Structures are given as structure tokens and as C-alpha cells.
Length: 117
Image (cartoon, rainbow, N blue to C red; front, side):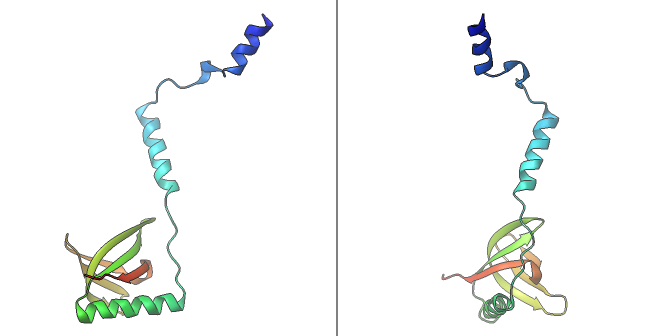
């Protein structure tokens, strides 16, 4: 009898394991996982801002493609684009990609790199 009792303990208590997950629980787990993947808004130093501004101006004047990494609602997004307008008063840049025209606040930029075509 003692052996059977130890055998039951070694395989775990199957009584409390979940055999199914309710849709509400699954949605909460999915939301929790997405929340864990979020990153804080990037904080760049002065040298990084100057380098980003240089690449943005180069793209604006020469109509060259660049790759932007920007923060939006807790996630980092990457896109290849061409800068159409830089608004220093509103600290906003307007760019176009294959899907259309979007505006991004400069404080949300994390990285900019030139793309060789």
C-alpha cells in the first residue's frame, strides 16, 4: 500500500491539471503574453539623434530609401521608406512606403539606416 501511495505522488497530482481551457482564459493568456513582449519608448542620446537627423535629411533631399525602426504602442516596427517631409515645429516626419503615407513622431524613432538599392 505504501508503494502505491508513493507512485501516485511521483507522477503528480493529475486531479488538479486542466484538461481544457475556457476561451476567456485563452484570451487572457494571449493578452498577457503580448503585454510581456512590449518594450519601453526609446531614449536616444544626442549623438544618436544627430546621426538619425543626418540620415533623414539625406533621404529627404536625395529621395533615397532608408530603413526606419520606430516605436508604436509598446512594439518596435521596421519599414523601408522614403522621407517626404520633416516638420521641426511639430517634431514629425512624413514618409511613404508601399502601403501609403504615414507620419511618425521623431521621439519614437529608435534607429535609421540607409538602404542600398
